Image 1 (cartoon, rainbow, N blue to C red):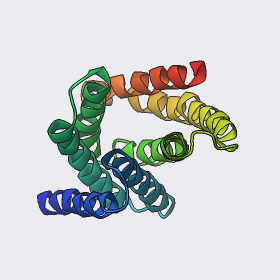
Image 2: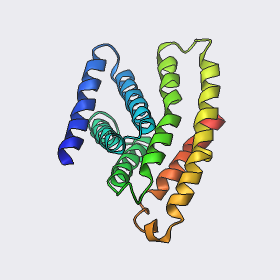
Image 3: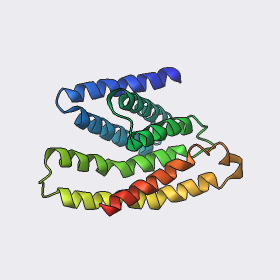
Length: 186
């Protein structure tokens, strides 16, 4: 297990290093995030619990290290670090008892438009597609966070036998709702 997570961290380190040859550091990190979200979504659709786990834990730990080494700690970065640590913990739980597999798959599916919006904002802010893509992003992300993620979270935390174990995870749901609100206000 540890070896697989370390390989996941190394995988994203290599991907990020290669991307930085062609993009700025921030765009490379964004592209790396897109690769993670897309690959996790595909692995989820294929039903590969093990690969979703190692891919996502590797990415979360890579991104946490990257944030700590290259960025200033602010509220947003602290929230990302918390998300990544809590998410790594959640993915370590038994998938036959805890439904992290579907929450990870649906959650990453909802994130995909974010990376295209960021890319256009940084490379072509005058793009005619940007306003349409931003609207799609709001609807897509908001719908997924409010409906499927809410239902999955409700069933996950409604089981008294799981409630204590899931305490570190519950704030992630509310972070998603807060981010939905931020997107909808823009």
